[in-house]
Length: 316
Ligand SMILES: NC(=O)C1=CN([C@@H]2O[C@H](COP(=O)(O)OP(=O)(O)OC[C@H]3O[C@@H](n4cnc5c(N)ncnc54)[C@H](O)[C@@H]3O)[C@@H](O)[C@H]2O)C=CC1
Ligand SMILES: O=C(CO)COP(=O)(O)O
Image (tube, rainbow, N blue to C red; front, side, top):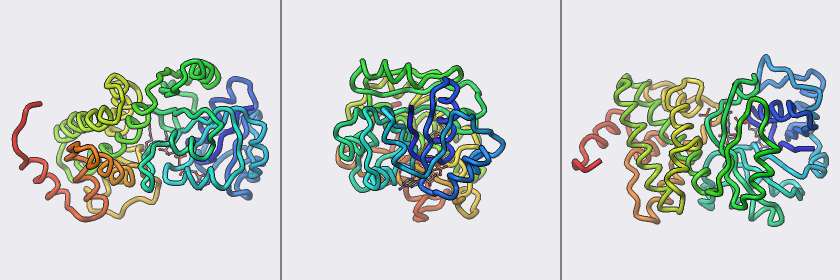
């Protein structure tokens, strides 16, 4: 049995696609009443219009996860440490499906897992995929970062489904940072579009944003080709171009002068964390810097644009 910890949009979508393989999937959520309703009606408020297959066991009882050799962790990044601390878990493989950097420790998901579950092999699953697309069985490709390639082969086989194709790499840091940093650039792109700055501005932000992602990630030991793959360029392309993205939507609201949406936006916290990581390493992240200030309300889009355009001219 595979376990999914976190019955939000992404955890539920992953459970649905994994159920296609015929295996039993235990979907755990912390809200017991809601999990009972999901079990009874086979639908989730996080994924309207999608029916949960019978091979998914929705539950609010964490003891059910004890039998799962592989556990997928699909909670918000800033909640990962707390979620693991709250539950007594002992999986063999713990696969993070969250995107971000922990603001308190500046660790990525696998380092958080390694602290909380030292006996588990930690890995990261990331890449371009909206939960609604995965749940509807639309074709999707993701990257699995696992330091031990033999374990990576096992997980790649276990987690790939008829519609979800998984590639693997041992570059865990690259996969983690690709998924985390693209969210910051998606907020910046949303702000540009929301403020009416145009598609050319968005293309410039995506390209120079990719340069920032590469600078920070390689300074932290990632391989550049990982960032040019699914968890990096692939996810950047998806989230910077789609209003379906919650990070893009947050930026759009900021740019348009509207109230920020309440939905989760991992990029808001990650912008602050990325700046701290970059400062420690002497890496310059101008787009991330203005995005962090935009999110905090310390800068207007007009001033952010001026800040970026007024910098000294440089080589590409
Ligand atoms: N929704 C999407 O399309 C995708 C989401 N992701 C990533 O998946 C992660 C989760 O996102 P979503 O599922 O979309 O968010 P969501 O907001 O739909 O669900 C988050 C779930 O985590 C639960 N949760 C929060 N704190 C918790 C805690 N301390 N203990 C236990 N459960 C807790 C909430 O109750 C909720 O059910 C994020 O890092 C996101 O970037 C990745 C790819 C696609
Ligand atoms: O990570 C995602 C798609 O790959 C989901 O993006 P949002 O969190 O911005 O909605």
